[in-house]
Length: 87
Image 1 (tube, rainbow, N blue to C red):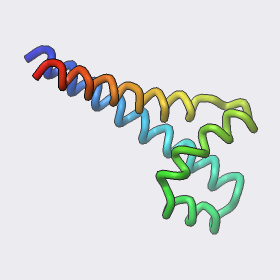
Image 2 (cartoon, rainbow, N blue to C red):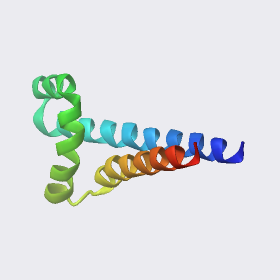
Image 3 (cartoon, rainbow, N blue to C red):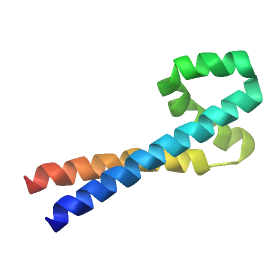
Image 4 (cartoon, rainbow, N blue to C red):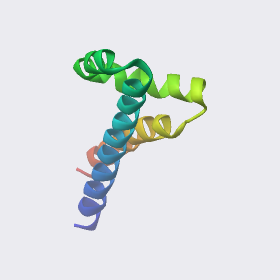
């Protein structure tokens, strides 16, 4: 039961990191490119979450969204791998 609780906790943390990083990236796009392109970025949100953290890291030197998005993805992959191993 403890391993199940730890897997659930890791999944919740991973998903929260990806969502928070995505919102930070979306806020960056909205601030830099304006409302109209912000609406377009909301429509193609997966592309925004994938590309905007890289751009913000290199252009602004703010690597927090990159760490949150890609670190959360790594955490989700690790938890999925461990869950399969424990079955």
